[in-house]
Structure formats: C-alpha cells, structure tokens
Length: 69
Image 1 (spheres, one colour):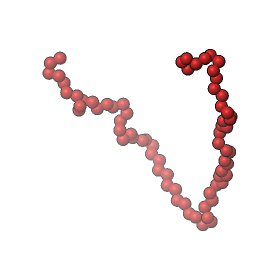
Image 2: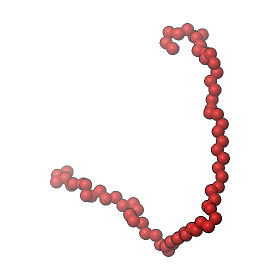
Image 3: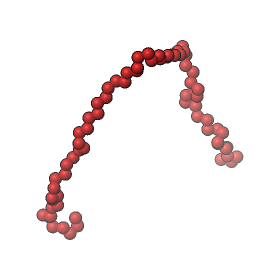
Image 4: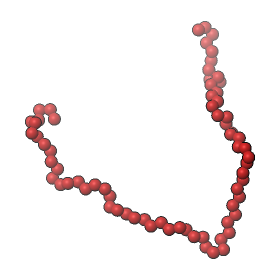
C-alpha cells in the first residue's frame, strides 16, 4: 500500500476451510424387465461421401473487382 509502514501486515481472525463436503453417488446398471425386445439395425457403406467438399472457400460471390487499381 502506498504510504503504509513496512511492518504493516494483515491477518485473518479465522482460518478458511477449503473444499466441499464429500458426497458419493452410487451408480448401478439399469436392467430391462424380462421379456423386453430390442431391434438394432446397423447400416454399413463401403465408401462415405462428404456432403460438403473439404477445403473449399467460396469468396468470389462477395468480391467486386476494382475498375482502376
């Protein structure tokens, strides 16, 4: 602090406690009732085609050339 003597110190009256109380949540697997039927369909393709080509920048639609440099 500006103008404070060199020996000036600040001390808290009570110590601070860190952290939150420990809380544990038990997680167990969810089991489907007996007789539940599940159908899973998996589709595989030999090749995958991107919807948008990679590394293409379309900037010429917003650029107007100057008539005189």
